Amino acid sequence: HLSMQNGDLQEHLKIIRETDVHISGPGTALMYQLFLPEGAVHINLGRTDAPCPRGYMEEYLAEGSPYLRALYYPSDRTLQPKPFTLLLHKAAQILKEDPPLPAPLGSNLSPVGQVYKAYVWLYFRGKEEEQAVRDVTPMRLYGGALWPGNGFPEVLVCRGSFNV
Image (cartoon, rainbow, N blue to C red):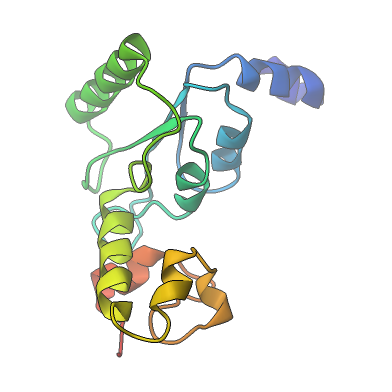
């Protein structure tokens, strides 16, 4: 948009704040979802160079933004018109139905993020750290094999690098 070309960040953020559907691949542009209005839909296109057929990287931003809904492009190495169009229709349907907020926990995670979350819950169930997982303690505070470090869940889920 012209507002970014001429350096007018305030104008650019105003546009984002009035956006109903935000579409982005992972990386810096994904950060704009934090400025979307309540009820907006964010579509994460994912990255094709991920260890999975598609990785979504900073999906924790959407999961931590219960005032919006997140959708994820299905696992495919290339962006295809039909699945992309179906995703846009789903975004339009969400906007039309205007589901209640906040978004339910886990609903803004990708399929990869959901697998990772389930695995962590199962791994720590009945163990000393279970309460920390329930309290949503950042994994970096107890680390170990399930902590992706500076990586993302797709590294653990799709490469099977849990080493537990």
